[in-house]
Amino acid sequence: MKKALVIIALSILVVSCNKATEVKEVKTAYVDTSVLMKEYTEAKDLEAKYKAQAEEKGRQLQAEITRFKQDAASFQGQAQANGQAWAQQRGAELQKREQQLGYAQQALSQQLQQESGVEMDSLISGVKKFIKDYGKKNGYSYIYGTGDAASILYAEEKYDITKDIIKALNDKYKAEPKTEAPAKEEAKK
Image (cartoon, rainbow, N blue to C red; front, side, top):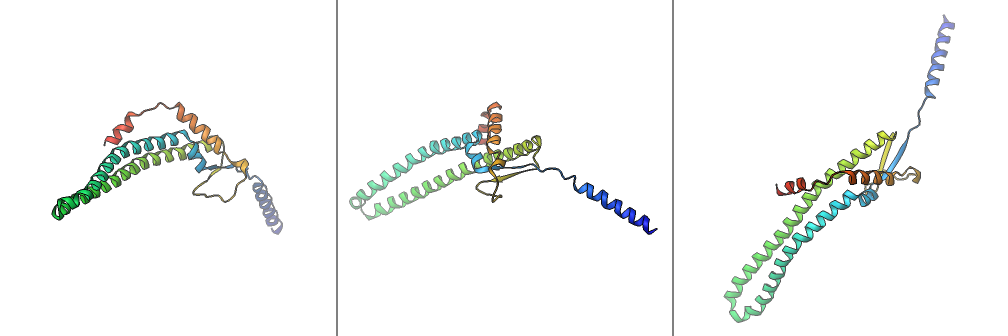
């Protein structure tokens, strides 16, 4: 009976030792996310789009600000000539205009941030999905991210697949048909 237990225990030990040696290699890599976002064509296009919108809408507001500054400069010259009552009334009007221009600047900035934020979130979600699919397709167990919000403190450069991801993303982006109309429809809402 003791011999049977010893034989069973030894056979279990041998089987468990054999299974421990069947560890598969784990394939890992990392992507420098700050480089990815700087070199990804769609991200560049998105940044350029909102920069152009900011400049266009900013020019309109800047013209109003310039008119306000001219009015404020002429007010100072006319204040002494037209008396204190006129100066108080006109000064209050100028303060109200200045406040309205400040609100307009703030509203414009918030609108552009909100619109670009929605599109940037969508872009980042798409990039994450792409990297996940890329990892599955290419047999990676893990793909880590480095960059501005680093989650890796050190990695050998041979594991950096940033350029591969950028090339694949840019190729995919170039191949996609450009649909500008839906984005404009969303902006109108």
